[in-house]
Image 1: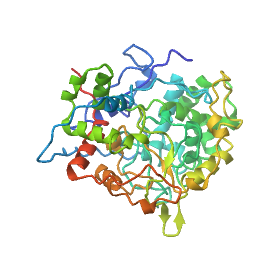
Image 2: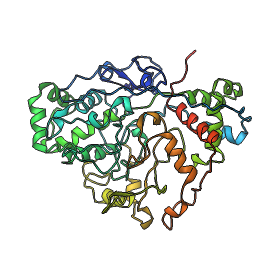
Image 3: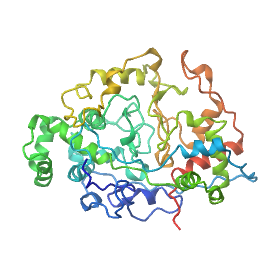
Image 4: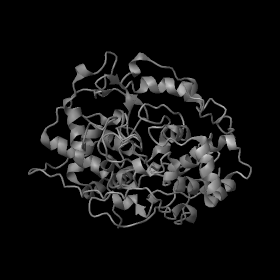
Length: 438
């Protein structure tokens, strides 16, 4: 399965290293991490080259350094129990080995990754020539944009917060409502939406025909391309690039791997407040019931008691509408645009085939992964939670009456005190802090 592929685990785009950008101090260095599929320290040069600067892009704003969260008293964390250790170890190892998308023939191909990387930063994909994918998915913000709701092409706000794209390859439904069942089908939506990119088939054809470099790279992937599939192929190349956006290893991963080896002494190198927060996360807080596994997400959808009105007169149905959108989508995994599956036992359409709408899905939204979360504020499908402290406060004070009748029985107010809230935030920050090398 394309065993020659080498991948990025510390994303470099436009000369920026995400692994350095998530540091809690000044963010300046550039680098890549080894491939999860290869012991070689090298990375394919076609993937690691800095993207060509494109006109129309707004310079990225550096993040403000984080202010340490400290309280006057810091009780020593209690010893980890065997259940806590097992729960912590379940959040790894990291990174997760790469598995190509069987429905995207470009998945994992270095040439497609490079074409997608260039297109991602190219404003010519938009109808007005001023917006690129990177405009709303900025590398130094975890591939989000730092706004509550992204700005539409007409100048007003879009309906939802721009999701970060780190670790997006690990999802099986895409978007806040899961309205797409593949990454490339997800890309097609903003690409053709007049409120976002608005790139029509004729404009995309003119772009590819008029740019010898892009045209040459496209023909490397398909010497005899079908003009009627150009828009789909562009989406698949973009998806191949997005699959490389793995968040880097973190300070949490150092602790997790040590515990997996039975090295309990490693807890001494992990911040005490973060360790108390981690114990709360996997213990009384029960946060790990939804934020599970290496990516800290179950990939599903829940009503967590947040408002779901786009404005005073229009609700956002969330997953309820997303399920209907997937089933009606001609580009879903049941459709004719999916590339032939080499291994018939590896059927990516199983989830779609058994999907059915339910009333309880109204107001449900994606459970986000927590890696790199420091970068992607504000939070929530509508960006209504400005910072991590606001997220923690929401779960501490959640109003159960706000959940719909057949809503989440898992949720209950945590009633955290100031120390516990600070500890939980300290833990969440270690999911964005690069691991410390000897």
